[in-house]
Amino acid sequence: MIKYPAGTSPKPKGEKIVRRPKNFSSANRGMNLEEDINISNQYYIDKDIAVITKRPTPINIVKVDYSKRAKIVDAYFEKQSTTDYNGVYRGKYIDFEAKSTKLHTSLPLSNITKHQVEHLIRVNKHGGIAFFIIRFEAFDETYLLDARYVIAAFSSNSRKSIPYATIKKEGHIIKKGFIPRLYYLEVVDSLYF
Amino acid sequence: MIKYPAGTSPKPKGEKIVRRPKNFSSANRGMNLEEDINISNQYYIDKDIAVITKRPTPINIVKVDYSKRAKIVDAYFEKQSTTDYNGVYRGKYIDFEAKSTKLHTSLPLSNITKHQVEHLIRVNKHGGIAFFIIRFEAFDETYLLDARYVIAAFSSNSRKSIPYATIKKEGHIIKKGFIPRLYYLEVVDSLYF
Image (cartoon, rainbow over all chains, first blue to last red; front, side, top):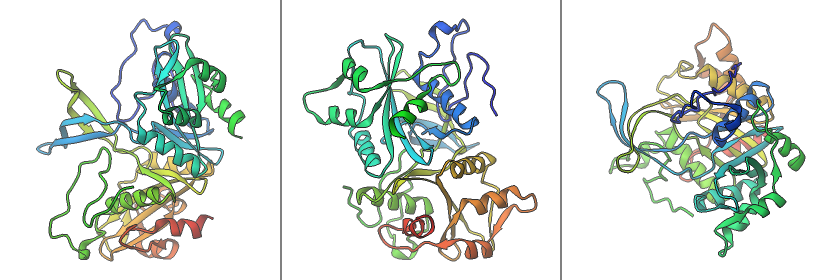
């Protein structure tokens, strides 16, 4: 069982750790969506509620130095071809992507790939639960939006983004707390069970 | 839809590619368990049978050079704290680990971690399907063994391995083919559905 002192978080595997500033206060708590989700997931694991984990960032390895311990000396970050998070909850397969924006009016879809959209279509087809967790940093609001809205917006040629108004209307706001930071499984409960 | 020319395979994300030798023949086909599973998974995705993917290998990144494109210049491989593969099949969450051994008499558990065993216990608890795919290279035999046998063997102090005889008795042999290399979902069908 992991203890969660204020302002620290479990180290995400395969990720560079960006330390919060020392003068961290509750005012800017929750500004990093990925960290909030990782802490929430660890809480859900520790409390035996769900097993949802972050997929490590894929790395394209060019060169490894085997002269000592295998040391990677030349490598590049790759785009996830699936999504960032998946796992099991109440017997169901869960799969989601997290996106954060500083914009006030819409979530741009420019950094969502065709592969990810295809992946989410397949997940739905095989009986999994697929959604996005979307944060509007300007309003400090976090929404759960079923993947079908993103798939539809992505597939329509005219739209390169999803309007804030649509997310507010079709999405479901995720309650924030200290631990878990995001009660996103409460929304999953009401929406999919 | 990906085409599968003989002797090539879809590039696994985040993995170093080890090319097969040019004189690749069917005699040594299937000697690399991970590659066999990756090709089978890609086939299952393309044929709309299941969505099961390999988690990228977690990398502990020490230093990134941002002077040009973000280049990782110092990093190390980490042990997976969960398992190598997960996904969704027929509405169920699937989670498994693949292990290969050159030994004739047993599968050593030395490279299976406590974290992985705890992860698999949780997966079972939350209604997921958890197993191992185990290859005995000496016999060119590949088995599907329910995770409970591995959990039990790992938890017993006396055993640091699972005998070949136990795997032969309690496991289920996976039929081999050209594509998919391993018909492991046939075993999943008969065992869990």
